[in-house]
Amino acid sequence: MMPLLAAAVDTAAWSPKTAIVMIACNIMAIAVAKATVQQPAVGAMPPSPEMFGGFSLGTVIGATSLGHVLGFGAIMGLSSMGVL
Image (cartoon, rainbow, N blue to C red; front, side, top):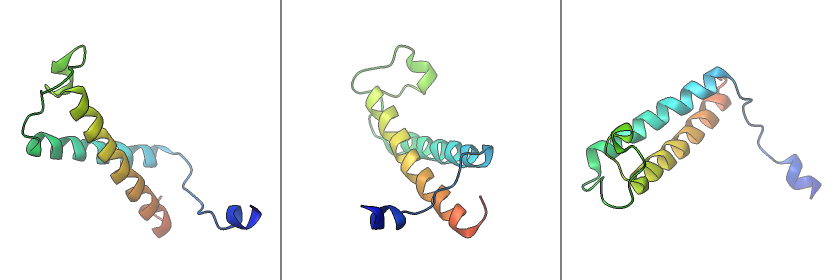
């Protein structure tokens, strides 16, 4: 088990810079969802749909999941380049 732990990638510590990158990636993913999802209001709706741009819960979860995947990649890439 120790060789596996020794080979683990050192991740970036949380800072306001990493938070800004994650927020920007989530906003980008929500914009992509707004432009591409054909039926964003089909399915269960959140308690206040106007707060989520009329998206259903499935669309909100899908868009933010994509945003987190993009954010993870961006944070790992920027930290490996020394920017973060």
